[in-house]
Image (cartoon, rainbow, N blue to C red; front, side):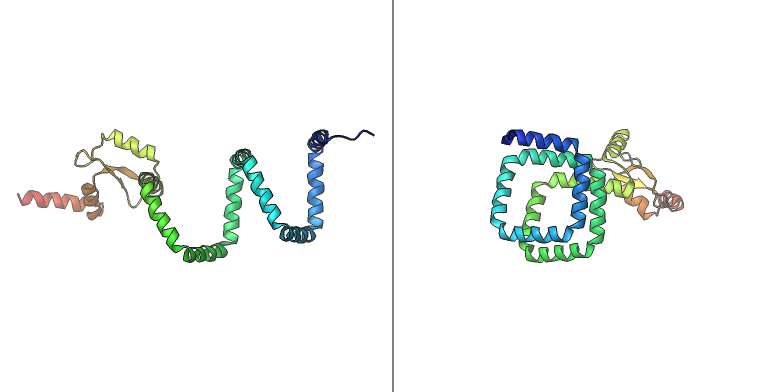
Length: 214
């Protein structure tokens, strides 16, 4: 019987796995289910006895295959994004209290470093943070995307829908009862409607008052 060399053995093993993939997976799954506790105990013992060797091997593997591993993980995540999100959400809900305790402990332990990093990060990413916060506010408060908001700005030629002044930053005006977006206003006109409680009666009485006091 001819003995296969190392490369032949690897090739044969890869071909065998491809041909019997489902069978091998089912067999491994069954074996793991039947021997779960024993496998966990043996793994823990092996890890404790070979901790340094494992750390060196993992570090070496990471350096040699870093790019391939990152590409594989990105591909896997992209193909299973929804599944990952569902699983993460379920895991968080199950371990919510544990997360809170761990985060609180970590913050107390590293409070100074976390604060310094936060200040540095905000300074270095000021514009990026401002844009991101703007996106979240538009979406959360008014159901608008940044593109929809910019489209409204262009439609109004950067002018307030009430006073007509050319304004660098326009505010979204919406109906507080229905949530419907009505247009974009300058800060003064936006406050005007807010102070008048969106009441046309109050605004008409204000007009009448101004006309009588001329």
